[in-house]
Length: 264
Length: 289
Image 1 (cartoon, chains in turn yellow, orange):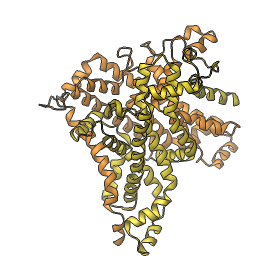
Image 2 (image 1 turned 180 degrees about the horizontal axis):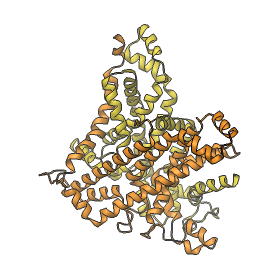
Image 3 (image 1 turned 180 degrees about the vertical axis):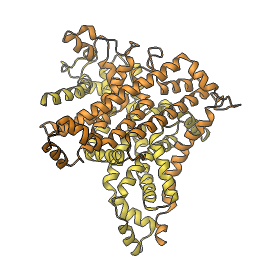
Image 4 (image 1 turned 60 degrees about the vertical axis):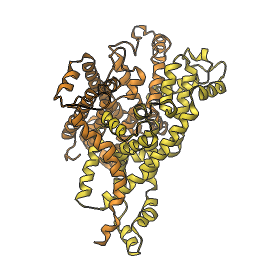
C-alpha cells in the first residue's frame, strides 16, 4: 500500500520537481532537462533575468489589480445576492435560482461577449475584464453562498429586526461576519480562477502593457523556448502567489468546493 | 410583512445585473448571430440560415476539431472519474502518508493550466524529455514517441496533462462523499458476509451516486470547453491534428469569420446541454438538477 502511495506521489511530484530544480541551473545544464541537482547553482541570475526580460513587474501588477478587485466584488455581490435569494421565498427568487443553475452548466459565449465588450468600448480595459470575472464566477459562488445561508437561522434576522436594526446594518454588522468561513472558501476559489485564467486576458487584454502573468509566461515561452532555466523560473514566479495562498487557506478550499459541488 | 423589506432587491441587483449583461446576454444573443453573416467588424447584413453550420461541417479542419473534442472529453472523463474514484478510496484508508497524499493529489488543481502545460512540453520533449528518457532507461525504447507532434497520439498526450491537473478535484469530491457514509453501515454489511466488492457495488456506490453524477458532469463540461491546455501544449497542431472546438472558435475569430465562430460556440453550448441532460437523467435518481 505504501508503495502505491509512493508511486502516485512520484507521478505528481516529478513534473513539479523538474521545473523547480531546472529553474536553479545554468542555461546549458537546464537544456538537458535532467532531474539531477545543479552542478552550478544559478538561482539569482535566472530569477532576476526573468524578472526583467519577461516584464514580470508590470504583469504582476496587472494581475494583482485584476484579481484583488474582482475577488473583492465577487465576495460582496455574490453574498448579497445569495442572501436575498435564500431568505426571500418568492417567485423571483425561485426563477433566479433556476437561472443560476443554468449558469453553472453553460459555457460563456466568447464571440458575442467580445461584441458586447466592443460595443461598450470595454475591450482592452481592466473594467471590462473585471466585469467578465464577476459575471463568470457569479453563478457558482452565489450557489456556494446560498448553501451556507441555510445554516444561519432566520430567527437571528428576526431578533435583530425587533431590535430595530436597518436592512443593510443587519447584513453587514450581523450576517456578513458569520460568513467568514465560506467567504474564505470563496476568496481562494475566486482568486485561483482569476489569477490562473488565460482565456479572458487572451481575448480581451491583448496588448503588451496590459498582459497578465498567464499571458507573459505564454509569450515568453514562445520567444525563449530553448532557455529552459528561464522558462521554468517564470513558471515558478507565476505559480508562487497561488501556492502561498493555498498553504494558508487549504482547509477552506476543500470545504468550499465540496459545499458547492457535492450539494448540487 | 415588515420582514420582507429587510431582503431588498438592491441587494440582489448588482451581482445579478452584471451576470445577466455580461454572461447571460452574450449566451442568448449567440443564438441569433450564429444564423447571420457576422463579419470581422461585428456587422451583419442578412440572415443566412444554416450556412455557417454547413461551412463548419464541410471544413475538414473543423471535423477534426469536433472529433478531437469528443475523444478528449471521453478519455479525460473516464480517467478523471475512474482514477478519482480509485484514489479517493485509497486515500480514505488510514495510512501514515494519507494526509500528505491528499494534499499532494490536490496540488496540481491550484496550479495555472498554462504553467502546467508548458512544464509538460519539457516532459514530452522527444529527445531529452523525462518521459522518453525514462522509457529508454528501463529498456522500453520502442515505446518512446514524439508525444506532441505525432498526430495519432497527440490528443492522448494532452488528455494525460488534463488528467494530471484535474484528477485531484474529483478525488476531493469523492472523498467528501465517502466520509459521509456511516461506518455502521459497512460494519453491518461485513457481519452479514458481504464481500469487499459487494459492499462497493450495493452500499457505497448508490450512496455516492450524486457525486459520481457531479464529477461526470464537471469532467464533461471541462472536456468540451477545453482551450488553454491545448493552446499552450500544441496550439492545435501539428496542422489541425489536435485542434478542438474552442481553438477552432479562436481561429475563426482571428480570421474575422465571426458568423462561423458564433455557430461553433452555439454547437458547443448545445453539446454541453445534451450531455449534461443525459447524464442527469440516468444518474440523478430524484431527477433534480
